[in-house]
Image (cartoon, rainbow over all chains, first blue to last red; front, side, top):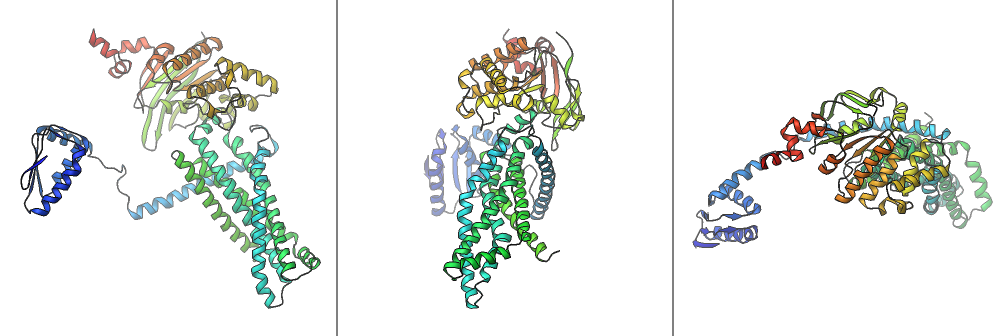
Length: 356
Length: 251
C-alpha cells in the first residue's frame, strides 16, 4: 500500500484484514489534509479475505471515497451482497405496542399452562399419597430431608433474629406508654400470622424452589424427562409428586419452628429489656395464641408450599436454551415464588382480618 | 419370520408452529425387521420417531403401535404400550443422579413386582450383554459417550421389549465403537427377535444392518423399501446420499 499522489492510494497484489486498520488510519489522515475525493486503487488486488471484502463494501457507501476494484473483487462483492441480502428478524420488526400485546398474551398463556399443570400436580400427588407405584422408593423421605431437615438451622437462626429485632424495636415504643405487656401480643400475633409463614416460605423458595426448577430444567435439557416418559414413568408422578408431598409436610413444620423460635426471641427481649417476668410473658402468650391463629398460619404455609412447588415445576418444564436457560429458570422461579407468596399472604391476611 | 406389522402409520402430518415437518407419511414396519429411517439433516427423522413413541402429537394422521391406535387412547393404556418398547436417546438420557445399575433397574423396579435379587441378576446380565460389567456402580457422569449409549441400550432392553427405537446410535462414536454397537444390534435382533427402528445417517451401519429403509426429504416420504430397490430406483438425492452417483460416473 502506498500513497502515490496526495489523495490516491494504490494497492498491490494482496490486501488482507491485517492491513485494514492501517488503511483506515491513512484515509482519516488524507481526509483531514485535503477536501478532494480519495481514490483507492485496488486494480491489481487479486488476493483478499472476507474482512477485507466487507470493508470494500463500506468504502462504496462513503461519498468521499472513490474506489477502483479489480474484476475479482467486483465479482466477490456481488456474491457477498447476495449472501447478506435478508432480514435478520424472521418476523420483521415488532413495534412497542405489538410487543406489549405479545407480552400480555404470553402472560395469559403461561397462566393457562400453570393452571393445567397445577391440576395435574394435585391429581398425581393426591394419588401418590395412597399409591406408592410409579415413584422411587424412599424418594418422599429423601425430599423431606432435603427440603425440611436441612433448612432447620437457617430457619432457626433467621426467625430468632427477626423475633429479637422486631421486639426490640417495638419494645422501645411500647415502653414509653407503659404498655410493655402488649409486646407479648405483638410478637405472638406478628410471628404466627405473618412473619413465621413468610420467613419459612421465602427461605424454602430460595433453597428448594430454585433447586426444583434447576433439577427439572436440567432433566428436560438432557432428555431425561423424555426418557422417563417412554419408560412409561410419568415425570409428574416420578419426579414431582415426591417433592409436592414432602413440601406440603415440611413447610408447615418449618413454619411452626419459625413461629416458636421467633416468639422466644421476643421472650428474651421482654424479660431482659422490658423486665417482664417469665411467668407473665408465658401466661400472656398462651392466652393470646388461639387455635384460630394457628389455623391461619398453617393454612398460609400449606398454600405457600404448593405455590413454591408449582412455580418451580412450571419454570423447570418450560426451560429454553442450554445451561443459561437452567440458570434463568432457577432465578425466575425464586422471584415468582416469593412474589406470589407475598401477594397471597396479603390477600389472606385481608380476608381473615376483615372476616370476609 | 412372522410378517405381522408392528407399526402402521397413515397420512401422518406434523407441524412446528406453521412449518410442516412431516407431510402425509405412511409406512408399515414388520415384526422382526431392522427398519432404518434416514435422510439429510432437518428432514424430520427424529420428529417422526418422537411421534411414534408418543412424545409429540401430530396434526393429523393415524399411528398404530402393536395393533393399537396410540392417538386415541388414554394415558394409562398408552403406558402399557410403552412398557413393550424401548428407546435409546441420542445422548443416552440416563438419570444423572443415579448409579448405572439403578438406571438399568428402574423400569423393572417400577413396572414389575420381581424381588430385589432377581432384578439385580437381570441388570447384571444386561450389563454384561453390552460389555459393561465394570461400570455397575459408576455414575453416568463418569462414563464416556459410547459407554453411556451402551448403558442406555441395556436400560432400553431390560424389559425385553418387542420394539426398540434408536435415535442416532452411532452419532459421535468412533468407527470401532460404532461397529461394535451395530454388532450388538444385529445380535439382539437374532437372539430376542426384536423389531428395531433406527434413525441414523451413518452409511456404514445402514449398509450393514438395514432390512428396509425409509428416506425422508424435507418431510416427504420419497422412498421406502430395501437398499437394492433404492439403488434400482435411481433417485438423484438417494444416489447422492449413498454415493452411488459418483461410482457410476467413474465407471
